[in-house]
Image 1: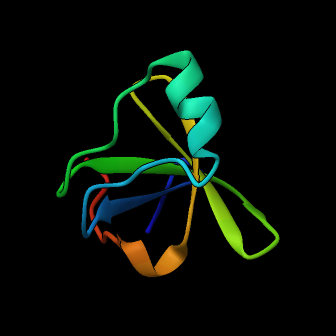
Image 2: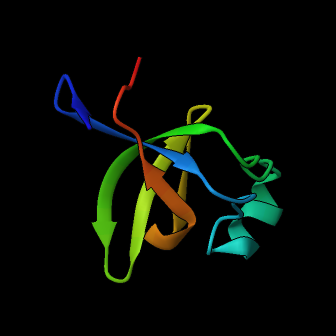
Length: 70
């Protein structure tokens, strides 16, 4: 659901950045299952999401759109 023109999802599993080398080098953690994330944009076959002020690229099948973003 869009809230203030923003779309939110819940993670269906633990999410690691598809660019795992960058994630390892920068040291940011994976997103736990059940966390609310903000959709940023679609990048090819991946979607870009934001969680904890960090951008991750992942696949849409690992996420579920939520109805109430509050």
